[in-house]
Image (cartoon, rainbow, N blue to C red):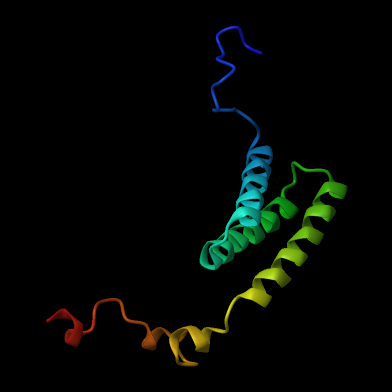
Length: 111
């Protein structure tokens, strides 16, 4: 440890891949402890994303990347199983089309 480093300081300097892995593990802990379904889905999506990018990171060994890529597949299946279909969320099957998305409040809602 550096002589001027406070052992209680929670700021760490680490390589990018290690920082992403640490953040992903923290998210996994939060996911396991959260009782809120919405928070769990959002955390699962971020975990899935982080695992994808870790699985592509050239700074990690090929074997480690393989493990992370397999974990990504499991989290991808978990997210897809828990997320309602888009049509259920917005009540229309065409909500993804650019012409159906509003970039401003509708005139009737402004009054």
